Length: 548
Ligand SMILES: Cc1cc2nc3c(=O)[nH]c(=O)nc-3n(C[C@H](O)[C@H](O)[C@H](O)COP(=O)(O)OP(=O)(O)OC[C@H]3O[C@@H](n4cnc5c(N)ncnc54)[C@H](O)[C@@H]3O)c2cc1C
Image 1 (cartoon, rainbow, N blue to C red):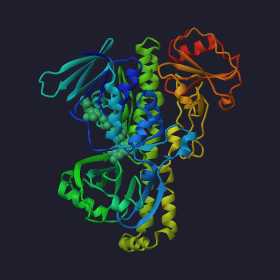
Image 2: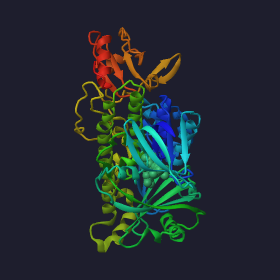
Image 3: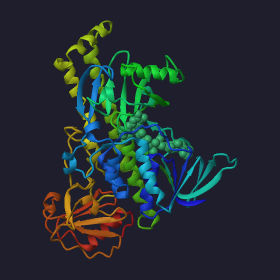
Image 4: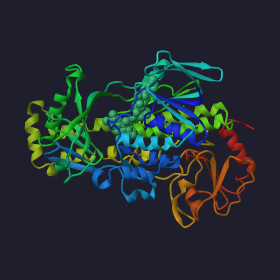
């Protein structure tokens, strides 16, 4: 078999990559070793940037929202003793309401990972340049002069088949065998904590309808763990930590898991079934390289974060968007191979930042434990029972809960990341923000930043300016009185910015911004003098690696 891009793994990131490539006219084959899609949910938070990318790719943001849990049900994270007992405090969970429409057309939504994958897969079914092979495990990869040949084992077939591709995207998850075969090492701690993820179905409404939420952190000394509520109140996961030095994951059979869950709820009145039990290890690791020749790591294959931050899937979709427009440009002869080197340069720092923040979030929860348990282990129970009496009046406890806010309000990580590479004209090196406040997003029109969203009227209809951007070409947004340059570039999409936009963008009435297919600002033209056809053409040539 032959294809332009072979994608290993049909998780959310592999599926999105196929869709993004398909939209640019690039064919792909996805090989997935499982016969069926996973039904156990993992991710729940699909953030605003991911939805923006999906919407542009044809999976409507409104559709994703309509399949998610509405903010009035999933808008809080709660700190409790057990699910059915004392609540110590609550925080709002990310920005899900209409207030956020000033900075994004699609606020974050809670949707279970299988549902999200289903929506992407449905869109993929409409494409005739994507083929998904299930029960197909990628094995050995051999790089040739102009591509890669993958040896793929099909379930029930003895001899491997060969798939030849120009490029390979390894979206084969945290335990990526492709990464190992390429000899790419992971950097960072491999085992921070061990968990069993117990997926259950059954109605928890009696305990949470009066205090709805998406995450419930249990702090009872004998019932620690966290509930993630997916799909209303009927599908949920209880995450239980365990110590492999004391017991093996095998100890968590269905009977044991039922007991753990009943204890964590604090009531045996819920009629529930255990659907899936899966052990997993919390790591904070980033691949030392994202590229080896014609093979690129994307998603969890490139980074594995603690889930405290809801960033794994979201970062993976960003990886897919970044590498796919670049591969498409190279395959279409519009860019030279060197453009592909900028994938790692741009995306790895984003992963490092997101990993660090996820670790900080995980570590900070310890402060709530300290406030509840005190510092004398011999008096832990006594201290805890006292804290349960009037938690709202316990200043140390409330301060510890409030200190968790950045964990659950990370808008800067979602929209504020910037790139610095050769695929941008004059981007500044990225300094960590001075105040390091991840809950503050300040729109920026600097090179490397994402073009900020704003509402505009198009033919009497309200649209985001982001929907005016081309996803397969560069877009030049010209201020209202600029003269679009005469530039014999048929792959340049030219649009006029709305009235007053130039002031926000910091260019004159005759200036413009050049936007990449992934929505990042590639170059700024302050005025008519700067905005000449040959200048824009030269910049594009440089960005795309074809000097001249
Ligand atoms: C409890 C929990 C909660 C989470 N919550 C969030 C959240 O709210 N938001 C968020 O953004 N992220 C969250 N995450 C992380 C998120 O689930 C992952 O980041 C996401 O699944 C990564 O997607 P992926 O496509 O890269 O990898 P995966 O989903 O792991 O998919 C990889 C696929 O590759 C296949 N595969 C592997 N090897 C081969 C091979 N050799 N050949 C063929 N196929 C192969 C596998 O079968 C699998 O289907 C959470 C994770 C956990 C555990």
